[in-house]
Image: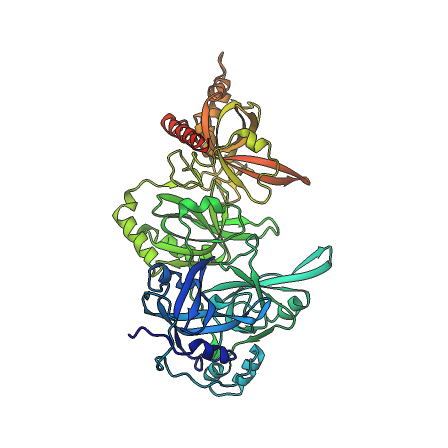
Length: 604
């Protein structure tokens, strides 16, 4: 293909910037100049030899840039784009490219020569187009025998990935994939109401839309779960990471002047499910955060369905636990709730011996047993998905994974872990760093590693609880005999004891109290809670129970801990929980000291 740009291409685009139909949009070839990253996108100047215009490529084309398909000083053909004003500079425009294709690799230099003859494609003459809202589009469709064709002639529907805060008018076609409840609020400016919806387009891109006060009242009943809508006249801003629930850099706000119209039956679509998988060994950094995650893994085990009593209304709801593993050789327990527990959960139970691969979208990460996952109303579970990640995982499991020892992410934290966020040799601090910073863990749990001595274990504390042998939840004594588990909704004649204890720890800078649960406490004490209880009940000249506790003190350990703030009776209290514990690896400690010495020498 001839290495040439379209003559006067940019001037033609600027003179036709009111165009709103993809069929009438001229395709031009331009040179990419000054290509550079800007967040998760890339900016460049589109050059036709005579003029330049600032331009932006979507995040979806990042792989083409990294692979070298699109290069600086190379040529691209613009297939789909919009012209937008630069905020504060109404005379200046920029080009938002939503679709393009590479024409030629990097040239020797920037094109600046005059054209001798037209080398570009034939451009259509400027036409007058009128911008139309979503409601106008729908009204025209209803009076036309071919609404889809009519839509293409009247208004171009924008994909969500192309939207940004600086864009002018746009119309999107989206499905409501989650609808929140109407909430009321009160602040210094007064009282109000708010609700939000999660919207997904045909390509699977999601965005959260929020409505306040009059807009919330106007659109709350109009938006229905699962229905498809045309939306226009909204605004966008950068998403607040603290509250966002979808993977999008922006969030949308709709006001009372926004247009929301339900699409006809012929325009309904099912969105593609897009996953952004987090490896199991990296889940620790998401514990107790608002951000939802996606996970893929091989099913290791599936529990029977349990009935759990919900605290707020005492309603019994079904739950089923599945254990997943991936190539990180870690496992995690995922709790399926409601219909997922009884529907897909039963299907997984029936095929558990075949170890299917499952992908789950929108999971909440909790701290039960260190790290755990739970489905929510909008979670999606796909069994044996047709994806490269699933194929790779299945090949790994069949070739070596099924014979590999797997450890739980919540308790498998050791000093040799490679994952920095979970390693006992990362984020190392002294106890004084924790005790002298009362604000630690206010917004979300923070994780540290520390080396300290167990200095005291209070012998008269409640050190364990009676637990169900199936689910490890607390049990109560049954009326006649045995023990009743509320979680499993069944009675057993026996139960087990599981640690829940506090230990005082000390280092050269101070002391504080840690909370330790069963797996970590067993490593500290050196025996199970049942065994320690047996020692406590034995009589003799030597108190074996007290001896066992004394043997556990003044021994040095490496701890992985989380620091969080909890409210009790209106007061905030700090809680330091042991997430992992290990004996000292002196070789590793020596390497750590040598690294510190090397850093200090460099800084001197």
